[in-house]
Length: 300
Image 1 (tube, rainbow, N blue to C red):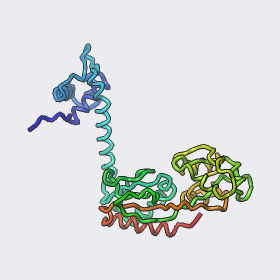
Image 2 (cartoon, rainbow, N blue to C red):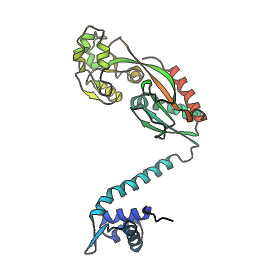
Image 3 (cartoon, rainbow, N blue to C red):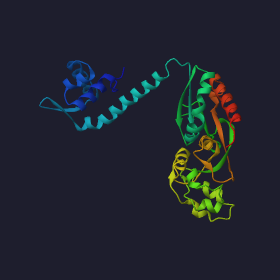
Image 4 (cartoon, rainbow, N blue to C red):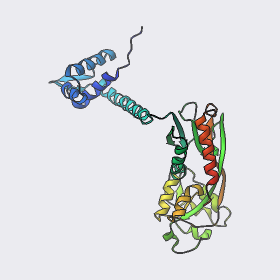
């Protein structure tokens, strides 16, 4: 059987503790082990790797060049193991886990506030949700489904269109200063909040208004629509955002429509499934619930 050069967890823990504490005695206290156990693990690791990881100077352990190079990776390995363990523990008692990649602002403003309804229908299911702006590679990433724009539908997947994307212009009431909904030239005079991952939205909105669209590119830039919503709510400027994401702030009065003009981007929100996931009862249940929730969502 070939010799293994892969360290054990005990060896990695002993090495990291010695590097941070400087002696095997203090490392043993930190790990709640005996000093001899830590010394054995450290010796075993150095023997396994065939290098000295420490220089011994007056009972102190000083990292060698090899030890310094190894420390960062050893710490990352232990951190990754701890993170993986914590993630598994978090799902304790749940029979089903839905791992999904979701557009950040859609997740925050629309999906997450509604998930308790699905959980009441299917209490044996829990969620592992990641925010994503880019297409998912289901062959390489551990997701069961994605909720993305239709332009992010990877080949070889099944996509169900949920709702056409329609943009609205929103602003804080104080920014409107008592005025009713504004004309395009009035909007152009206000600070326009930019969405950096979709930089042409304002250009598209102003295209048929007769205004000089170049002025529409000026303004503070943000990665996500939820940042644009927050910035608009605080009065920093006018936001051009999907109506689905703006509905809560509009209903609560934190934002008002600054223009009656809506802008259909031609894109849609889509539920995207790899072929292997379509037979899952939990995913079918989530799909049916999602479609029903979308159908009940009132317009802004």
